Image 1 (cartoon, rainbow, N blue to C red):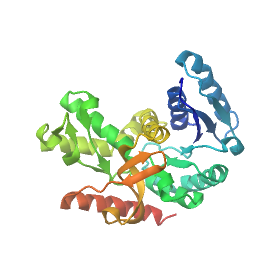
Image 2 (cartoon, rainbow, N blue to C red):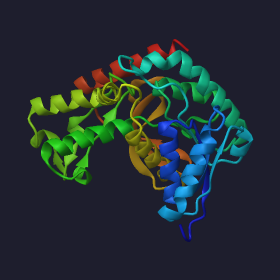
Image 3 (spheres, rainbow, N blue to C red):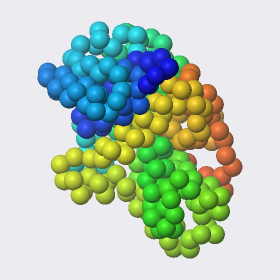
Amino acid sequence: MAGIQRRKVTVIGAGNVGATTAQRIAESGLADVILVDIVEGLPQGKGLDLAEAAPVMGHDARIIGTNNYDDTKGSDIIVVTSGIARKPGMSRDDLINTNAGIVRSVVSEAAKRSPDAILVIVTNPLDAMCHVALKASGFPKKRVIGMAGTLDSARFRHFIATETGVSVEDVRAFVLGGHGDTMVPLPRYSAVGGIPLPEMLSTERIEAIVKRTRSGGAEIVELLKTGSAFYAPAAATFEVVESILLDRRRLIPCAAYLEGEYGVQGLYVGVPVVIGASGIERIIEITLTAEESAAFKKSADAVQELVALL
């Protein structure tokens, strides 16, 4: 992209989410991409394939696939997607033991080579993996971000747009809490073209959409049989990465480390945050009803139970 100084983004994990995220970043022209994986040949093959698409897509971003963390040195952003994916019947929480070890290892390797980078965590169970990454990296909390509410909110917006028959561009919606079955979609803070959602849809229709949003990832897992979602997770991850690279200061829901906000202490939970060049610029506290607060506390408690297993 002419006139823009490209940065360096490392994507760890060359599976579907990682490779698709690398593709979106490269095609934006905003950064060169290092795609890392433990499997020999996998990142190299996908990296070469993506690089060979560049002449068609019209960008000059360099894409390098590697098994060597030395190639990641000096990265501005490190996106962590590595880990095992869900299979039908599994919850995100079932992945914790295996993925905690993977995230701890890859973050340690990458962080020591890029001590000033911002970490964007995508691996499930997301909120618990953010906790692992924070400890393994030693980074300040503002530089360890969880991509969760971004994706959940996108699913919520899609379902609202489909139900109301309007463009997704006119739908604004928030999903807070942990990235799991206890997530907290907030219809009261959702709107269609500025019109509050409760004025557009009946309570019954909203409740159905909220239920489908909570099981959005599981619905795709059941349909695919052999994998989990990757197009929407990659798009949501790119939204976070872009806001950092361009210092856009987007207000989007992400997993952030809370120290008293929303009555939560020492946990990563999805809340509205401002994302800019330094990571999480600030956490936005919104007023919740008693019912919403109870749902948020239930979600935070579920995250606490997972973290206790680490």
